Length: 550
Image (cartoon, rainbow, N blue to C red):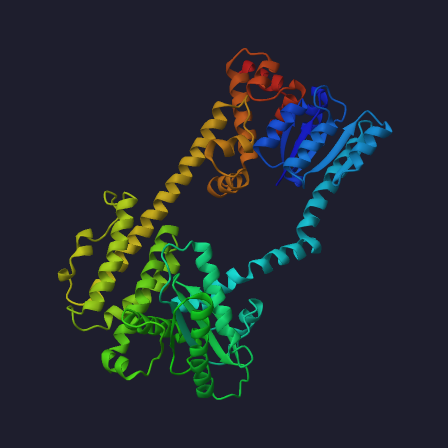
């Protein structure tokens, strides 16, 4: 749908053009009219206008002045000058602007319609224009670092949507790694970073360190870098030569890190500590490896700084024990998944929520003891997220929960973790059901408000822009929502409301025909008569006479 604004100081001209384009359903135009340049500015200040059909020679603000304002506010707006003046200075002033055409008022309806159709075609062609796409791609390339960071972050969070890693994704994001090869992971953190350091300065410092570190290995390895969780510099590393032994690459990285540490300390006065994986891993396990290396750094960073650690340090293996890895990995990854569940709740993403929750439920169900502390942490973390959402949205008093909410804080109510996980799933399902119900009610309330306003303001401004301002919705979105809920276009609903009101006034009052026309929003009695006959097969007077005869 395109918005067409008709501007002329002659009301008869505006009303004629308004009726002309109002009868062209194939163009799907949202029509607006103004009788002065100042009135036109009022519309331009309220909403984006796609096409302006305007006179040039008008009292007050003329068409050329209006054009300057249009191009300032909406540069892509197409302007068609329709005027009785064909002086060269007017024509020259008009056509020197891009997207401007010129017609004399002596042109017939067909030519005027064709000019507006051409303007619409130009707008649609712009959407497909290769130059526009090229500029969009250039803008996208500027956002490439952000896209790379988000993609790598999804891998570190263990999101299934990013797996399996595809080579085409890496190529699109210009990540110079091979999806078919494993990766070696490296984490780094600053030991003496000042808390008083501004965010911008901190970021510059992190990337300066990155450049120093990579300077020592750039010819021997390929890598991708991300700053994750604000404090951790993370590298995904592969040998530059795919045939190079991985153990050789790992040793090279470890030795070069010591040199990089000295460079950072001497040039930046920054102490860096690193944790490097003992071996390469598949892409699907980078999340678990990240949390393992993060724990390794955190366990050692309190007492030592400026160190380089690998996972096979003897004291680390002793501290973790042979049977603790599965639980530790779960504890590192599941809090992040619970945060993602909270985001799904907030956004009403039910399917995404339960896809993530299935992993958590499976993990809980596999724990035999109800006294298991990791399982208790996971359960209480998720139950707190659910309870917080329920309270903030005022859902506690709604009749939609099929189970008591008291169990959210009572783990002793369950015989096993499988039952506890099933309970949380049912509560979450109830929350989404209430969400959907509330959403439907809010949408229905909006539609009722729009319908009520239309019925009570048939003689006033009931444009899509006005209705959008009334509901605080974008006019185009409101139009789609109205059609989705009612099955009827807003314009058709307005026409029907005007027709029904006109029938009521014609049959039940002694108002004159032109008075009825004004009350239902028609400035022109002739246009009202045409509209009424087209809708009913009778003129307004014939319709009134049919009731008198009864």
